[in-house]
Image (cartoon, rainbow, N blue to C red):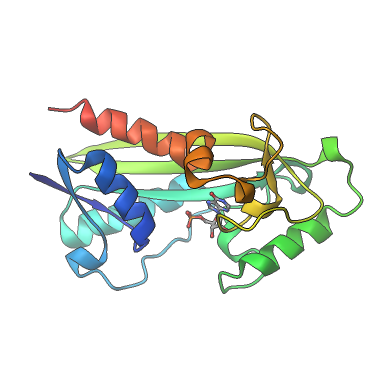
Length: 196
Ligand code: IMP
């Protein structure tokens, strides 16, 4: 079976991709190839970060590879936190502090001024070719947290095409069916499954 690396240490993401591609590809995580170093993510766009991670694996380990990167883009903040979503409030990945920072920056803004989107870029390096897959979902940043599921900014993000629930109030299945990552992953899976 063809081996392909997903440049992540996130067990949940790996399991999801294995379920979708497992009969065609052996999906390896970073730990599976003995990659324990911190891969640089210093680009100023999510596409650049996804490309950096995939290129690092390809160069140092020789495997075909794909990598994802996600950002929350808030229009009233000129696209912030964007590529800095994980470490918006501090270098540590503190989601609660990140949410507090967003809420305080948007304080006083009316509902229709609180538009935002999540965007995911997946870069696949296969042989000598590079492929980019993108997914996005439009939404509103609420004024306070709702729900306890999910992670990151889920509790303040209300997708426009939903039924009023935030991502943190949805089941993982409901969220995945409309989410940025779900959409980007679906495009990647369709592409890989269409190859012989
Ligand atoms: P990553 O590229 O998947 O690591 O995502 C970067 C950061 O974006 C995360 O640390 C979260 O803060 C945020 N993020 C990514 N995906 C989601 C999501 O589905 N819901 C909420 N926040 C997310």
